[in-house]
Image (cartoon, rainbow, N blue to C red; front, side, top):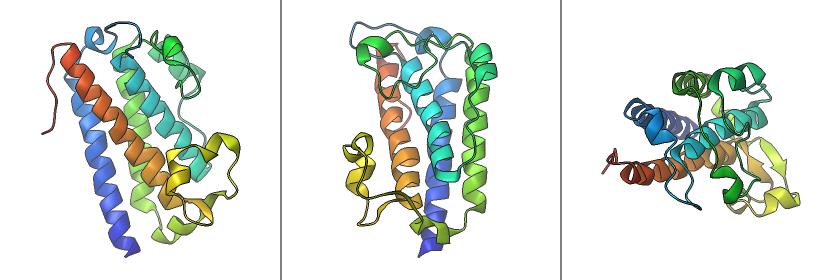
Length: 188
């Protein structure tokens, strides 16, 4: 059963990453940085937030340092050098990407690393507890805390929640926002 779960997770992550690649390949910087109105986050937020969170969560799962660093910030030129998880919409509505091609390179580096890890993952690691109960306050109110079993958040829970489900949530935002900038959705 663990091999079946791993195979499914590998395929789902590759497919989701493929949707992100399709999105960025069919948008320009004017679409990504479009300001609709106060309270509506730009596509730049969803793109960077998810990619940077996958990068950070990968470290929490594997212990391997994130790809994002000062060099990437210099290249990508994010208006706000923060994924924004603990910031308000009022702050993050100002998120913009400076160099879209550099962002795409960063996104590819993060996604390729995750997929390579999944290709080599021993399914026996799925049950390893990353965040034991009782959860700290910052974790207790999260989706992954609701999903977690009696021992806490496992590698499987984290991979499903922090990487896959979180990525789909933001892909939905991107597909909706594409309509606001005159582009269509990508799936039916």
